[in-house]
Image 1 (cartoon, helix red, strand yellow):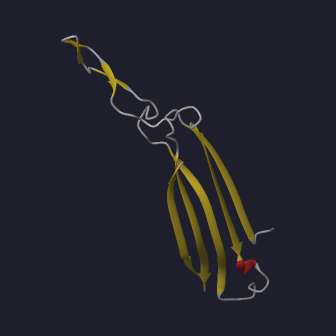
Image 2: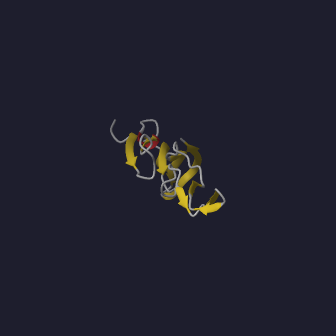
Image 3: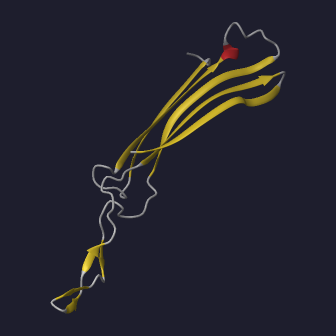
Length: 136
């Protein structure tokens, strides 16, 4: 492929104790590719063109920044109740948490052009970024 074509792939496999068994691990891939058009024969002799590269990328990031034990229904003491005419000490579940809670995943896509003309850098002449959050 030489220096005309660029490719990179990454894979993350992250774990967190903030999630229940079965949801502790998240897989987050990313890929990027580029094409240096100025390395092509049809553009090599263009004097005013320094670099011309088209690039794109796609990737996912994971977020596990939630409160502790959000997958458990926690029991709170001090929830006294009346039984048989007397007040009795008690406990109760006050918050119904989500045992299926898992990684928040953000997907990011990018398309861009990097170029230099007449020895002057114009980086990211065109760059489009798309960022989408997604809950699994």
